[in-house]
Structure formats: C-alpha cells, structure tokens
Length: 206
Image 1 (cartoon, rainbow, N blue to C red):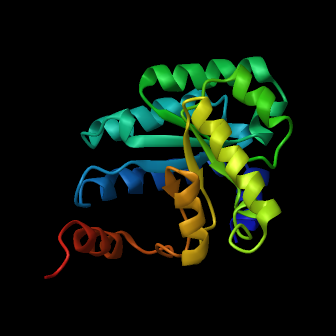
Image 2: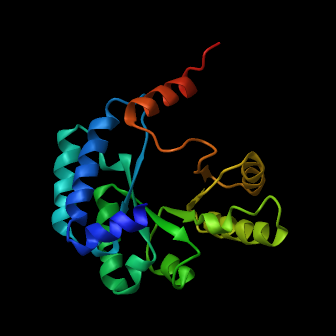
Image 3: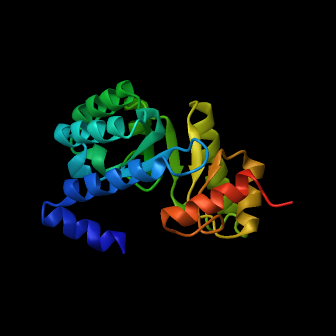
C-alpha cells in the first residue's frame, strides 16, 4: 500500500526519483487520453522545497507539449507544519508557474484553518474519514456540510474523497460539493483502460 512503499522511498532517498518517473509517465499518457483533463500529483513533505524536482518537471511537461495548468499539486498539511514561511513561498511560486494547488486530507492535519489563512490554495480535498458515514450519520453529515460551506465561502473548489456508494454521492450533491473522488466512479487502472472509460463517458453508445 502507498503508506508502505512511499515511506520506503523516502527512507532510501528515492522519493524524487519515483516522482519524476511517475510524472514522465503522466506526461506521456496525457496526450493519449480524450479531452483535456487535469492530473493530480501528490508531493511528499520532503519534496516541497526541492527546486531541482520542479525544474525537472518543467522540462518534462514542456517536452510533452503540455501546460502547467494541466497539473494539480496535492500537499498534505503535514508538509506545511515545519516551516510555514518556506511552504508559503513554495506554493506561491508553483501557482505563479501555472500549477493548481490542493490541500489534501483537509481536516485531519494540524490547524487547518490557519493553513487556509496563511497559504493560497485553489482546492481543498476533504478526507474520506469525514465522508464515508454522511448518508447514515447526521453528525458526520453536519461536519462534511460545514467543511464544504467553508471551502466555498473562501472561493475554493472542494473535492470529497473516498466516495464508495450512491447514497453518499447523493448527499454530497445536496450539499453542493464540487468534485467527487472514489471507487464508486472507478478503481485504479492503466492508461489504456482510462482512455476507453473516458471515451465512453464523452461519447456513450446509443
């Protein structure tokens, strides 16, 4: 699982090499998918200040004929805790370069509201722990609704993670959530399968 191999990559100082390998594949896959989709990339906390990593990413998306606005960088709150000033500078430079920036696992980290005040994000992603029970637990639904309202009041796009059944999706639609993510829509799949699934969505068989 990701929490195992990502930790191993960090411990072995291979996380940036892994990220570049994945980003290179994404740039190749982007040109074979129908439509103009955005791709999300998670960064490890230790990568947030790696300017060499960002320079390599710039070379890859330029060579692929892509623009930086095709990519969204997801940052967990844990990456922001150690040095908020450096984190703010890095996020600002990424946004100026054209990347969209998302605060991942919103609500689970340290002082979420402080980070929203101090750093300019484009999106918040509500952790699945706040989403999974909203169809059966009104208290859970109230928390999720409050987080969605907060995001929208700050002019942030809001993504709900971990959607696995239709009842949860229906509640999120009632709450006005912008984007949903989870196994209800699709499980991980190779690029050719994604291309076929997207083509079916864009041009469903009659």
